[in-house]
Image (cartoon, rainbow, N blue to C red; front, side, top):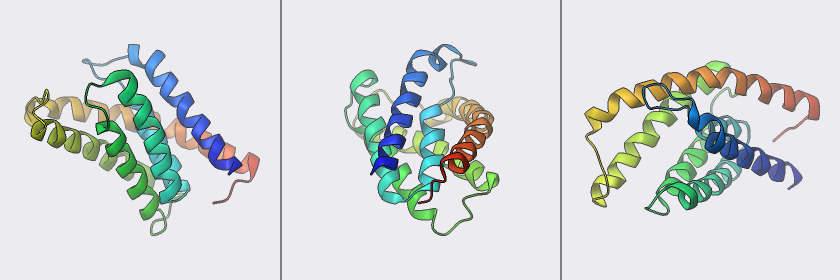
Length: 164
């Protein structure tokens, strides 16, 4: 339980960083999604329950502070955390490339499901083709931030001998 509390604190810290500092560093109007990258890395190192719980926590924070449609980010991040945690049993999770693949797929999945939900709820849904450029830019930014996150994760796992 204590390990999960630390993971929740890390997720909240990433949300605060995303909201306060990273939000201002944009390329073509797109910022890196630190919350998504850390959620995927945490989910791959733990299990589906912890991944989904972290996704719910950060999704609720995101929905409360930034979106008009409450629950959309919570649902999407919970699904990403759950699926990443569930698939972590079947993949070699200590490999950087596994984290890279999951980050790329997680970014595409996030935007695709976000678009589908907004389209069917008749919220502000722009064209998926128009969003393609933004998705690619965010994917590249997420990949760039993945390596430092991955290295920090490895440092903390070794230092505190964390095993899930």
